[in-house]
Image (tube, rainbow, N blue to C red; front, side, top):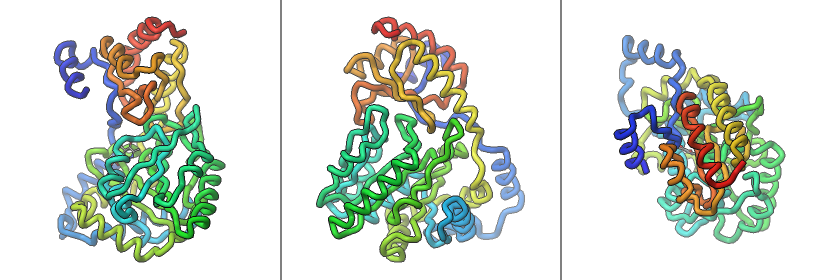
Length: 376
Ligand SMILES: Cc1ncc(COP(=O)(O)O)c(C=O)c1O
């Protein structure tokens, strides 16, 4: 698909191909980051390029722990934080740490397809569980899916590919469910919260603090999206101070970070993101893009859940065969991803972290295809 997109761009020119296929943030990092980078280049700290403790710089972890403590009201300390090579690195470290061969991880579906590979990397198996029509969690279905082989539930909010944000009541009920099920099984289930888009939220809503609702929670996040540093591979994982076997778990996470070959997160980036914990790119810009595209698609007759975060829309395709549908869009030089790539055929994903001009120029194509399928 990527190659076909490149071919279209070669034939028609970049500005005439509307590429919504990749979740690659199109905003620049905050100017303060570039200033700090220049400052470090001009006044290097001796030893700043050397090996370091595998969990990362103590100063950075301390700042992050203080930030989470303030946000959650819980007693986070630097020892609860491991700096990671993005959220992707963090998730792999978590699975390497908690999974034994054949363990299952429950993942609400649709889901970010890489999850399956990360889980399999550590000998586990993904257990997708369908969500409700509005992509909210079907807690009953999750409860029914928990069994002898379940080790963890992995949630992702704001969500890729749907843009849905789970509300506090849902997270609370999920926490209760996991406590109940851990009790029945006589062992602890983990809750892994992928918050890669945690600061990309709209409509003034606040992301629930998952740590408050379940003690055995691990947050995995990064600055790929909120500071537009996706190529720099900087993130962290934070383990609840109330997690079972805390010291052993932390030691295993740090060891996994090392032996998976990450060793430690990039040194320069650890220094740069520390003072930016409360910053993000201007989220209003993404919100405007969401509004522009969402309202247009609704007007053209597409069925689509209004996202409250991340930078994706996941409309229903007007035919079951999502691949033939995205081919139809492609013939109008609009590149999207079929829903089956996220475990949900019959839908398609639009990644709208692109210039407004791309969105505007794509609209006639979306409209034509809608008309062709009798929508509106
Ligand atoms: C849901 C989700 N989790 C994790 C990641 C990985 O992000 P990172 O760049 O921090 O590794 C992504 C990237 O798109 C994502 O969409």
